[in-house]
Image (tube, rainbow, N blue to C red; front, side, top):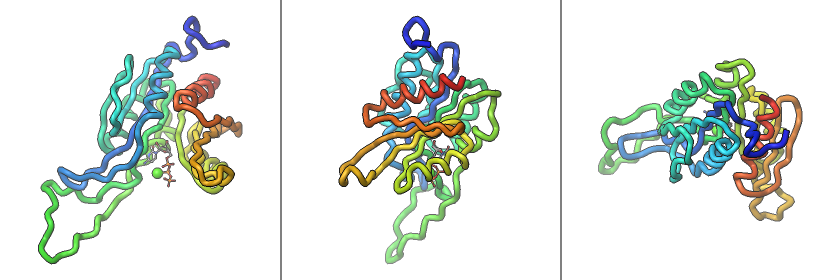
Length: 224
Ligand code: CTP
Ligand code: CA
């Protein structure tokens, strides 16, 4: 079915998208964070609205304005992101985990600012694992037929790493960003391949994040 204003292919669907990078606090003024911009997740939100979906955007840290027509839930930590995603996913047709979820958080949160002590080296920061939201959502679908999508950046054997991650996570689609491809002679190339649990692979050429988002929605719509 051709996609267009008359027949938006995500009409009547609730899609949940996580975006941005979580921040894991050490004390009231410091956190462990990452470089995620949130732009891919926000592009997914905008394009899903254009295709007729009701969109809940669970946004960890970004410097981006709320997209029009989207229900935005702001979160800080991975644990908060998990709560918000699970809640929104209860009646969702699609869950897309585009957020950069911190794998670890400080084991101890210092309620007061950590201070230097004269002549002493700092204590090491102990870390503990965060919950794996994508694996949990995939294993325990809130709705039969719910489509679950993950993202990953891989180097070296991108396809083998991506396939292994897709199987480990149990999601339906994994959007794998190829980073550091040897054939580009050291220049940066971001070429995505969408791996599906049915074994299919869809190459997405280098281009704007909206274009990748549209291909993700094509792949999702075909599975709804
Ligand atoms: N993800 C998640 N919860 C986590 C970590 C990751 O839901 N605690 C999700 C991400 O949002 C992404 C996918 O899992 O959609 C893959 O993230 P990635 O960091 O590549 O996977 P990891 O299992 O953390 O593997 P790695 O050790 O390579 O970081
Ligand atoms: Ca990780």
